[in-house]
Image 1 (cartoon, rainbow, N blue to C red):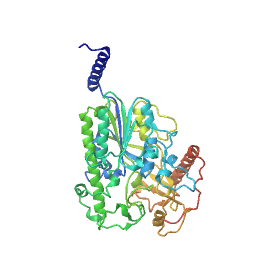
Image 2 (cartoon, rainbow, N blue to C red):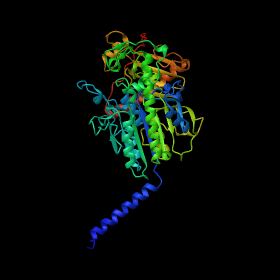
Image 3 (tube, rainbow, N blue to C red):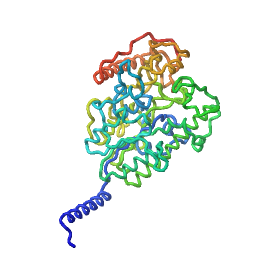
Image 4 (cartoon, rainbow, N blue to C red):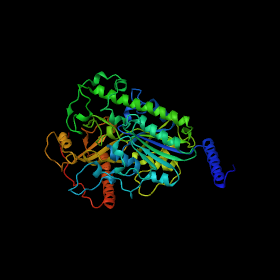
Length: 485
């Protein structure tokens, strides 16, 4: 029987599709831009940060293939605002809502990145890139406004056998792999992967990695445990594994979790090579924020404006076509707000207006590129902000202000309300130390210079926030407190 015209047209379309697939699989791969943002990852616990344990062989290899940054700082020390800064390339305070007094304060009401604010991922999407984000923690859910600009925005998927959500870097990388494998080979793409392994390590036991590194004998002290979800000078009960756990055991668990993540990253790298994608992909691994082991007063938590919570690793391993100083370290001072503007420039795309982030692409080709003079951080547990340069950090905080009265009480040592107590300190990084508990009053010339920069920047941010959200009452000045805790 002869084939009708509709059947002939169908066969022709099928043959054309097969030919396209064949060409697609054999043609050159599109450009890839991959950002892996790791929660609670400290710079000084990696080989590239001078650590004495082999926690990061894959990360160290990526650093040798590209450029790693010695002076990269998170714009916020907490999960939601840290990712706002990374994804928006803006000061995270712009996403903190001004709420009426009758509105119950929680994370879903307090934080949202507005649709009419900058969304750099939308620039990739509008320029023909396929875009996707795969997140590992509920705090990156669409309710917080992150998802604009992503064609696919996906949280933990359910295991088809057990029906339970799968968390962790390996699960995130599998979801990304499925998405990338379904993309046409010639398609340019941008992907953002959030990994929360190091946040989850305190609540989940894994004997293989918990005990991979032996505890250091000099860290045999058992820290106190408190009942609040977040508090100073004690391990929060939600992060306490039970028993008489020593600081050495906590540190070993954290280091083991880094090595486990590093292994998952090695498998992802191998998969990109297998797909023929690695050569054309610019890979960025960045710590979204750090982790405190008591240096800042917090224990196994993040949320202060100290170096242990803000100094993060940043590695840029560019696609082969981009000429870079491979295997080099940069002293450029950069913020996590700067990551996406840099990637847009490397992709030849113009950033949208209104970004606070600045491209540091020159650091990939110039050893003398210095980056910023000052970077800014905010959105800690305590109200306030900080300004940092290569030598030190100025902090202006109000320890008695915040949504959790128990956190404030743990700082002062009693439940008294002290909303107007102001703390201004300067930490000289050259003197060592990662926490800012015993730092000097902000009276030096260096401190005053940073204090002026911090105040000016904060006023600009509050002005922009007022335009986005409505009027906001500024933080009232007060005499510096002598309370040093």
